[in-house]
Amino acid sequence: KNIIKINIIYLFLSLFNCFGQAQKPSASFMQSVIPLENLYLNVEKKVSVKLCNHSVLEAQFIWGQAEGEDASAFQIDIEPSQDIVRSKSNFECLIKIRPNKIIEIKDLRIPCYIQDQTEPLFINLEGMAR
Image 1 (tube, rainbow, N blue to C red):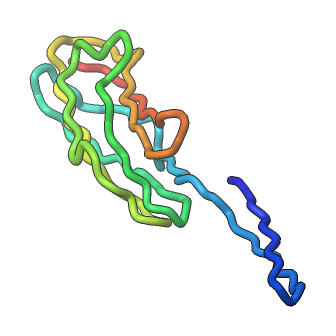
Image 2 (tube, helix red, strand yellow):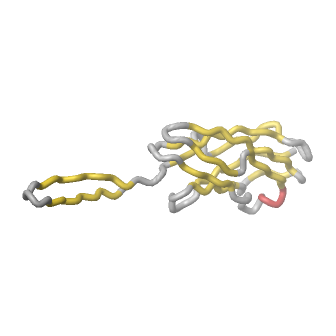
């Protein structure tokens, strides 16, 4: 958050102080670690996640590709893949995950890139695909 102070002097030597703030969106997930229960080989599981916008600015987001050592063991789709979170509100996304092998999930995360935030947010998935 940057604070800008501007002094304005008019012909009549009146002095006005103007203050303003430059803000960036501030977003987070309600839950950043998602435990996956009843996850079965080649069966799609749907999980809801909520993205929270804490600022008065709208925030555009876009989901990235799954990352981590276990990412290749899953087919993952997210709806919507990108959108805008209104100011001071929550936005629900649906993660559809389908395991293509039996595995204990130890390293699986999905990045979510928020406009004007320097680092992505991550949803971490954990559990066992049977």
